[in-house]
Amino acid sequence: MTTEQKALMLQLQQVGLSMDDLRIYLDTHLDDSFAIERFNMAASDYQELMAEYGRLYGPLTQSCPQQGETSEWSWGMTDFPWQY
Image (cartoon, rainbow, N blue to C red; front, side):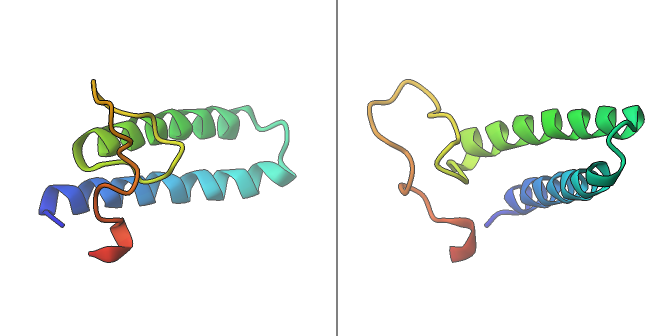
């Protein structure tokens, strides 16, 4: 795993953790508009990071969109993150 790939993976993990924390908070603070706004921003960032990671290094999940003009199914064609 390259340094750039590790950095992108770390960003994904950080944003994902903030989404988890906000989701737990919002379970008990349903009307906190600031937290809802932060969650939506984090979710948008997460989707962008997932798309970028998939484009550069292959999909992390089966729900990642197929990238590029290819007739091959890219899931499973690259090493999985836990194989590094």
